[in-house]
Amino acid sequence: MDKRTFTKKLIELFRNNTGCGIQHGGCPCNTCFHNQEADFQHICWLIVLGLRGDYGEEILDSIDKELNGIEDK
Image 1: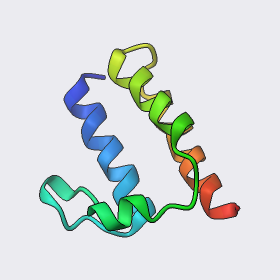
Image 2: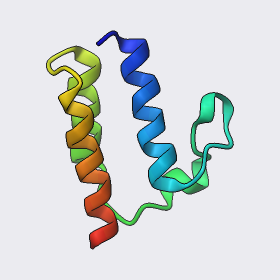
Image 3: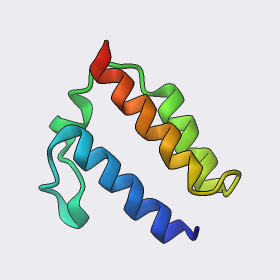
Image 4: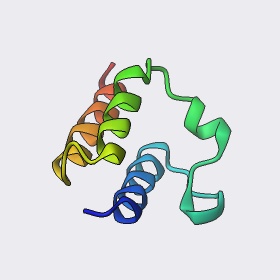
């Protein structure tokens, strides 16, 4: 998957998780994005791995699981 497609799908995951897509490109706003009650270190690392190209589309599933895990806490 190219970086543009990855980024688009990543933004979609955050938009769906926060319920906000008000910023340009469908991104969540700063308030909604940072309103998550979790430590984003691991999620950010997964994003870096995806952008670096270490993993294919399956990295999005891992990010989605991490985001959904936040809601379960």
